[in-house]
Image (tube, rainbow, N blue to C red; front, side):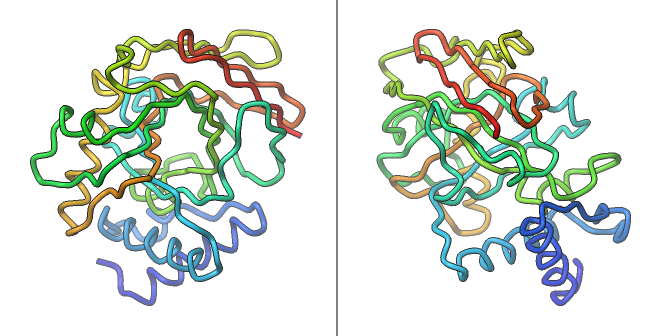
Length: 261
């Protein structure tokens, strides 16, 4: 693994890039032997710096859970990051474009837990039992590491490229709807750009929640009641520019709209 002082140094670089909306050189270009364990250690230091600055953690994002996203990035392993309270928007929001770097949108479902979830053998059924409700969501990607040539190590270190999420108004319990067939029709300025269904995320969008619980168990941790879990995109990322109006139709789970200002 990288020495602790180097891990802290990279985390501080990423904090500064976030503050200035900048982009830093790829970690793997500078440290070719950096591992996934290094990347989560970097993310952990960055997270702790933000918590110490007064931000509040509200949940986790899971990424790279669908073939669409894996093909778009060339990365085949899921990853995860943290979400803070000041990154949550509701449908209809005006989102400051200049708060982010390399701005793209993904179509997802988010899940709010009603009880803790843990275990080395956590299954989809366990995850569904722990979920209070599902809610449609858009994720705003925010990359502070140069995109070309990046690997899973670079992405994880950069908090899995999470920037913000926009939540819809419709809540559904897992027993109220077959979540696999929730659609997503994503438009930019009135033109449809991406479509998909939630089954594209590992066969069922809550499968990623079970995966994350198993991953946390490896570190003697668990997902807590009340946390929001953003489960991964079932469309490719869509680039947006300042002034763009974004709309996503989730069929029976309603519509999300937002505008980048």
